[in-house]
Image 1 (cartoon, helix red, strand yellow):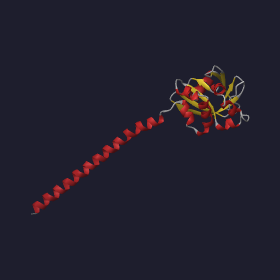
Image 2 (tube, one colour; image 1 turned 90 degrees about the vertical axis):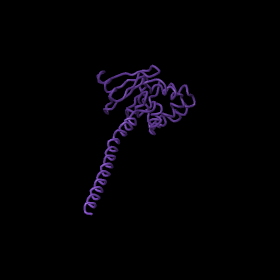
Image 3 (cartoon, helix red, strand yellow; image 1 turned 60 degrees about the horizontal axis):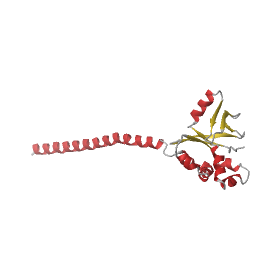
Image 4 (tube, helix red, strand yellow; image 1 turned 45 degrees about the vertical axis):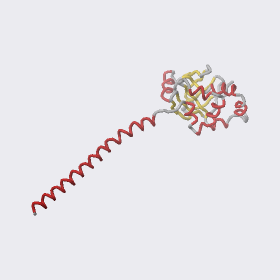
Amino acid sequence: MRKFLFIAAVATSALYFVTGNASAQVADTTKKATPATTTPASAAAAAPADDVARVLLSNADYSTAAAAFKTAGLDTVLKAGGPYTIFAPNNNAFTKLPAGTLEGLSKDPAKLSAFLKGHVVNGKYGKADIIKALTEGKGKATFTTIDGQALALSVSPNKTLQLTNSAGNSAEVSLYDLIGTNGVVNGINAVLLPK
């Protein structure tokens, strides 16, 4: 009888040991699998998923510019092709315009389009690209807008990036690198009025 009890105790211990190891192996497998599935998902989230028109629309501080681009019909242009760099005035910049300016332009999509094209450059110029262009130009650089105007870049007395259009109107870059699939949006603190 003692022999039978001893064998039963050993069998129960062996069963417990095997069951415990099996669940430990499952737990280890799960732990190893978790990082592999999270890494691609986080990498996909970091990659730009929208064109520059949608990136502009996704930032509440630039809703006035996004609405203006849509009214002018430029949102469809900015969804295709590129790369583009939009120097987008923030909402506060539009409030500094003379009363009725934006409303008047919005009634004529062709004029509004011409006005907004002075804020869009062919090519993708994020912060690092702009710094490189300024370094190569010894503190000055010139970009060409999609309608052929010159947009001069320089460092302002405040040590920020300043843009000046052909009419002599200036704005400072206040936000960099809203990255889209076909370009980048950089925010500015003033509207670059044409001549």
